Image 1 (tube, rainbow, N blue to C red):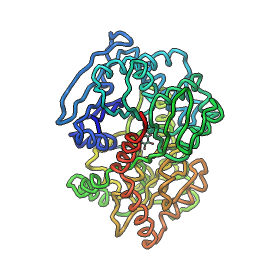
Image 2: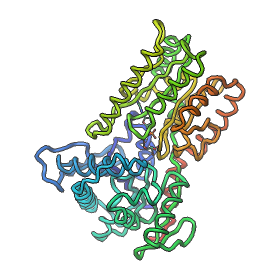
Image 3: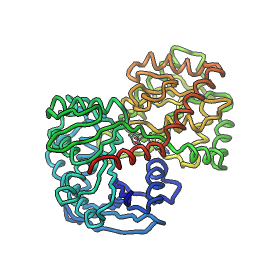
Image 4: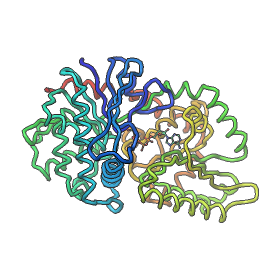
Length: 459
Ligand code: ADQ
């Protein structure tokens, strides 16, 4: 196999343990083959010219990191405007939050074009390219237009919506056409693949050559579900580490008389936080035995604060948690703690282990790695219970979680109560089955499945 080239919006030094998730997954593959990782540097140049950016090259062990700066204009239209103001909301079914400002698509195309140009100059003929996520959908088409003939695969980390929702994007057909420049497109779930199949069947009359093979625009494309997993051993090692153990101990002391319900995510409207808070309020109303006993700890990391919808969400959450605390709080018990910050990755497993119940209740999510991390971090002898939204991609695999519809406040409250009361034997049985799945389909399995499928495509 040739050199692996990973292309993603952000690039991380794979040797640094703090990066987690994707960095661990692709980092190991890159280290093995001595690959190249290419993307935006994270730097925004105030007086930069749109469509131009400096290329930086660094060697990180066996991996070459190549990053490009963005001008303020490009950052505004490509990153904030189109990627996070159009594609993110629509792909999460939130058409109401999309800003279809015509200017954004120009920036999105321009930056993809510019990045493709910079990347093309670094490529070797036998490279294998793996492009990640919604920021870079047109990358392969831009590279092909420059004559690149290497194998190129694409993985979408977020959901693909059904055809009529996708069709609300003024340039939806162009986006899907761009996907046909890849050799392999990977989605998180079978549901996403079904949406793709149904879109290309109805909107562009593609030929369906098989369950995973489509032909349109003179190109044949392989499409398959590759549910992303986590690095279970990395998480276990972190859980056994001193920072995680100190965190667990601190939590167990602080909440010795309480049952902890835990939510951890980026603060994002796709994660269903207002709905979760309302379900918790209903839990306290309908099951008063939880008063003075259940505490919801919500940790929401700051995210994309320059996008309006995110600032509005923060206000809504603060007002909801304030109202719940003042309605139900007692002198020695606050029902909710809502914290707007990151937890160090080394401490995270300790937090997961101290929770009786994890509330992972997104309205829509590509996969959701927190659900898998929670399971992997538990003590098998006394595991916590996972309450999981049926609209998270993870629900396609994690059948032994307690699945909920987060829009149904009453059902969610009732399910949280079930979770709080679940007998030990049932908790152990469910956890064992969940852990088996999380272990079998881990991040290494995901990476290998994708790269084998890509290597098997006909260039
Ligand atoms: P995200 O939307 O960011 O990812 P998720 O899959 O849950 O969602 O991954 C978040 C990661 O960040 C986890 O590793 C988690 O531990 C960490 N994290 C979240 N909040 C944190 C906090 N407050 N402090 C510390 N760490 C925190 C996107 C898609 C998902 C898809 C992933 C991977 O939206 O659906 O599962 O990519 O493909």
